[in-house]
Image 1 (cartoon, rainbow, N blue to C red):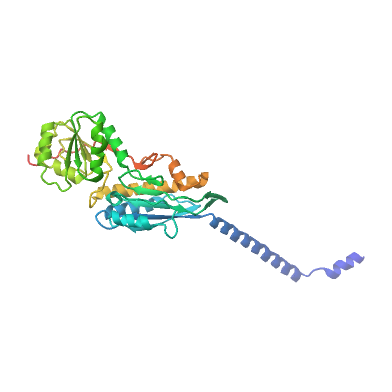
Image 2: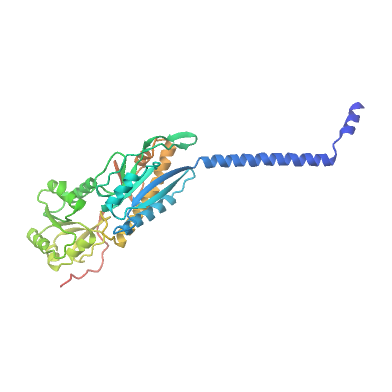
Amino acid sequence: MGLSWFHMKFRPSSRMLRSLSIATGVLVLGLLLAGAFSFRQGQEKKIEVFQGSACLPLSGELAGAGDAFRTGFVEGIASVPDSHFVWRWNFADNGSDPFLAQAWADSVGRSRAPDLLLAGLGSATEGLRVPRLESDSTKLSEGRNVFRTKSVPCFLLGDGTSGGENIWNIWPTTDRMRAHLLDLLREAKKPVVVVVAATGSWAEIVLSGLRDSLPGLVVLPHDLDNTRWDEETKRLWETKPQTVLFWDRPHEASALLAKPLAVGALRRAKLFVPEGTIYPGSLDVSVMAPVWQPASPPDSLQCRRLRDWGREVGASLVRATRLALADSLGDLLAGIRKLPPDSLARESWTQGWSPILTSRIPTPRSPQPDSGH
């Protein structure tokens, strides 16, 4: 009887129950929102920001080539999104001038070292000395320290020597191209003639190593502003070559092949010409791609090749970053080195990545008449 009286006395009203229910709902909703916000913050904290600093020719004679590579590089990074990290890049202009490129290299990292450098391209990197920078940035992956103090790597889009330990070449070096040309010419029919631009790295490859490794090789050097080609044509007739390598730019190779007398000396020869060369359809030609050094200014075909290559390098960088984070490799360069050669456009070697070098027979077409006949 007493218990029944107690329940009757203190039975909660419907209004009290409704108020209690609302208060409980608000509390639960608040806890859910707080948890969601906390979870979102936790997710956002896992996104690491990688900083890159690049110096390319965005003005001057090589502006078209530099801009093409930059466009492709940015496209390549965007094509492989990742929820755990982002890359942010700052691009400086070296004006196609190696002195401005060196000034950038000397100044970069004075305030805070980036995670990666990128320097290019062609003659703008001639003699470039990339400083050894130490980065104190630490990257996390699932709560673990992944990147600690390390030497900042540099992507070098150049055609000189391999460089130091922190250099990762993203273009064929002098040594790599020399080896490729040796493979191309070692089994070629003799006599072999190389028509070479007598300047910088073009001549260095032929005169330092290639000539010594191929006994009987005939070298025909020419100036970049050559217009007559009389001496070269005379030597071709004297040599009667079976194989001719044009180791120069397309417009220079085209200039010699526009001479009817020179074409007459080449009718029995196998020719290797840079992509973009204009040649008579009656000749036996294989086209080499990509062109090792862009012309000044570069043509549309070279710019398209560099944009494609930039896209490949950008996408490969994201994959290498993902690999370094996932495997806790210790630094970014370790991920770059470990990235497998899983691309049809990129080959990997101990000191860099390169576009796959090809020597292809062009698609058959209607013969072009020899000029002057």
